[in-house]
Image (cartoon, rainbow over all chains, first blue to last red; front, side, top):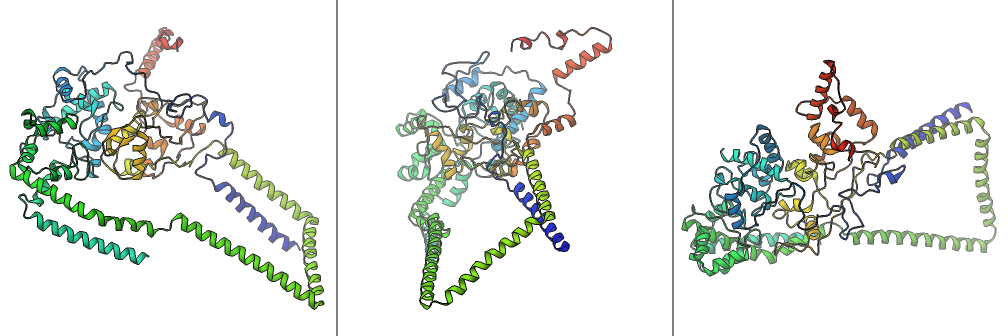
Length: 194
Length: 423
């Protein structure tokens, strides 16, 4: 009788351990699982990239009203046309101090935002281009679609292109602040000489 | 069905081959050399043009085929600016239609080169035109290869129906047999006795087990251990979302963008180094590339729909635009403050330190537990890099002052910063 019990006890212990493992391991990856005090996780305050029923378009991130300018923001009043581009090319010059630090920042920003297409050396051979995106012209050897050699592009022309985009290139105004654009331009000028 | 589609496929393939050979033969009579033109086209033109689709410039297939004046075309290809400056009406019309965006001047192309390109475009466009009606057949094949939802549902229905029928038939057979037995009379009673004995036996066993104190004791012990360990693990995992992998509205593959293309995380999450939030990219960032590539993918069309973008006219209709509701994975409770820029810019952490190997994730999941213990463990182990950081340099200066035996005022510690009081 006792021998029987031992086997039973052993069996039940094994079953219990197996059950515990099964219960605790099967977790639904589509679900966050149990939450304590969920109102702390589902914020009452609206996060910038979350939905918001108080606005017409349902977004928390609203565009500022048309015509508003942040304090200290320098506007770039050149239209997105060929004339605006040429005008910016002659009138706009960088005001950024040409320091080693700014150059280094420019290189990092260039590698993050430009090199996928333009390549690490500005040859227009980035990885995205290798996978089928139309290749941009080389900074040092190519011809600009708006006339002249790429290596002769001035501050204002490059700034106009980053701000509005051209041909296959989109506008980078939403990803690069004006000062960051000038840092990138510092590095692009270096690549033009390669 | 499958063999039929295979035959169709083979037939269509051979048809396309024959058609393309025929066109190659025909185009040999044309002025230019299409093969030379193809190489030139791919190096000079594909930045802005596709043959079958409007990109930055017009879809060349229709435009070049419908324009019969080759001399004018060659002039335009070599120097479109000269034509526009000379106020050529055709040139001006195109110039204005495309928002006065100028085409590159190709001074390095000879008349023969331009003629070759024209010949290539016309030949390629013809191939596309003849291939199109046939292309429908192989296009239909993938639908047949995988069973559709309807087929699966149908099969399940059939199986369920079959089970129901079997059950009903069983019942009918049972009642019929009983009826038969009833007529015969005697045999029925014997069976009833047998049926009655079995449940009594089972109950007896259960009763015996309940009376066995040792058994009951061990059942209770095991139950307590099971419940205890279950609640222990559950409590530890409450509010911990490790492994959480919700279904996102668009199947964005991080392994393709960050892994294969090696696009930096901050290209899209550009807030990570300058803001509290890493930020989810707005759709214009997607359009930087997807205006041009993968334009046929249904997932990319979700982006177009959300933007109200028309691929034919390449115009945005803001009245049709609506936000895409991505589902947040990494979520900190309101009582914890976390700032991305502090960790990415100041500490110089790699995104993968906390977010795991995102460059290999087809679908993103939460890699780190984001618990307080996890935060504190890292903060205890991480050395602070004080170089080039004004805040820490000030701290070191203040310490030097103390070492020199000088007074340290509140102002030296930033006590007269506006934000100390007016925040």
